[in-house]
Image (cartoon, rainbow, N blue to C red; front, side, top):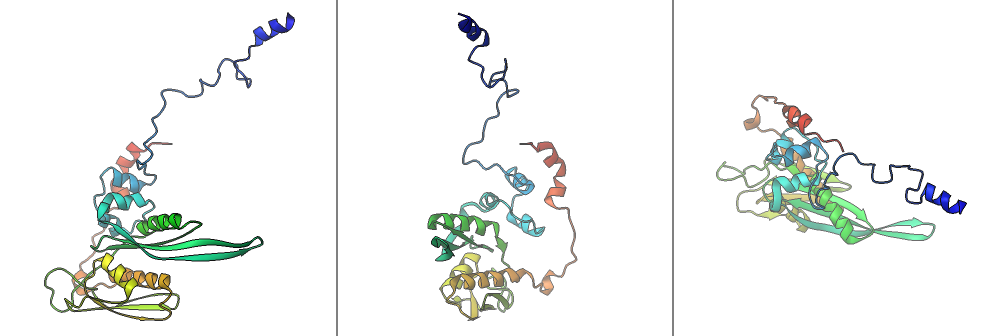
Length: 260
């Protein structure tokens, strides 16, 4: 009888010494609705400005050399025009005490055929995972490509503006402007990259161990990145400095900031 009275007095429903609070009294106020699984929740200032429509083109990002830390920024600004292609998949091995550990390394290029290209690589245990990671890496490595003319400045730019060189490992690649109608005079890997960059006519010259397709792709990517490093006379106007998007919209960012 005494045990029963003690049990009725103490009760068994609370547990863990929480007293009258129980487990339901933790949260204060209504619960916040979680975003959908596929919905993009930006975590950087640049991402918030892009999602809210304050930045409308990827050129605004390149103008201030802002680093892209979220691949969804590129998806949002360029959209379905961006296509990807696998350059190479190769197995790599590491010797451990238990034997060999094999993983797969993927090189993937992304481009819209209109002056933007990115190259990414990823190593993972499965091929699908490495390709998916390489696509994300390539989107965050997106760069602008400057195009020019051979001879008369008629019509749309169709070739590289000047001779440019890129290198990776022992591979050296040189891109030379070509007259309209020449096409892309290059091997398979450079031709894919140049097509995705939107270049129609170019001559190429390569040296080194070009059978290493990964290094060849990186060398072409580095050469294309140098097209904006040479300023021809028409680009000699004085620079007018303007505030970066984060500075321009600082009040908006402070007002819409939500602490997680």
